Image (cartoon, rainbow over all chains, first blue to last red; front, side, top):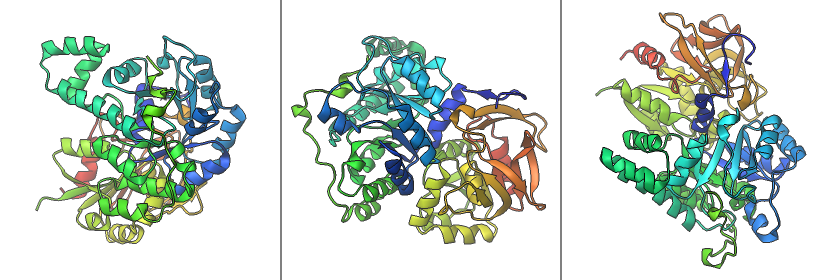
Length: 297
Length: 192
């Protein structure tokens, strides 16, 4: 729509603005148009199109890449809510393809096999907004300095185990609280410790929050998991394997949507958790061969 | 009792509206239940996903309480998804999506296209001396406005800010601009 009257597209405000619209919602991993319809019917605020959910990537092994464009286009045609898709860490060519397909958000994701061991994508170079994972505040601020417009705690994808997401959220939010009360001289040391740009550390100090929204991902398998991470301070949840690896995906999806809205109301969480069938089986973190959260630099 | 402006907080950009209202010194309440709805003196329906909000309204048994409060004259501001919910007809919506019919508009969801077509631009608003910087995110397009609808701003010939009686709607996101004039106008018109 940039043809005439000074309409500016792809600006930081426009890119961060869509993340603002996704707050209080659930973004669901889907692998085909049928799953995308189930997600939209359940009230998902957006879907994440990918070839295999993280639990299957973990089980099958091999290199995990950007999805087939045909599958992404099929999902886009099936739903009216925003469609996100994943590119490998550092794989800017995959991101260019996703932008040309018109996806609404690109996830530069540790769930896929990294393409670059030192560099993340220069996300300022894109009009499509990016979401990136983080395990701590330094990582979050480095991603924001590269142009990410939305941060999600990484958790440990495909495990159905919430413990890592909780650790990452507590680390990020705990450090934000400490920085808020630090004096101006201490901020230089914080920037050094976090390996993050000083101006962003100063912004966190002044505002008491990240410059972009922060959601939670990695290990959410029940409505109570969603309630837990949102009470800790996440503003929305990404649910990957937790829905389509449960015994009744449509009901689980609906229940987690309700839980994300009424996260502070235990009576609602109890009601939507009742008779829900079994959640995904899940994995013990200590027994994992690969920790996806360690990918990214 | 000081009046309270409720912000529907089922999903979407409710926190940004609360922030602006706080700045104006207005008492606010995040509304997720019928009891909370009952206690507010004006209401904002924020942006977000209109399909998600419509389903959550239904599952929370909020559709009828909302319709009756709004029909009885509760001042309301709907932005983006809020505009869609308040309109009389949704083109290209889901068949199960609710249109509350409080303002006589036909709207098309995502009428401008995908996120890549989202934009910001200055608009002239009736009654404002200076342009308002408006942010459009996967915005709806108003394709028809009824005779009773007062059009306060347009972009490319499409109405983007409208009013009918106690109902004001914006296709854009005044809560994302660093400019509180539209919120102030809404709060003033609600009589505070």
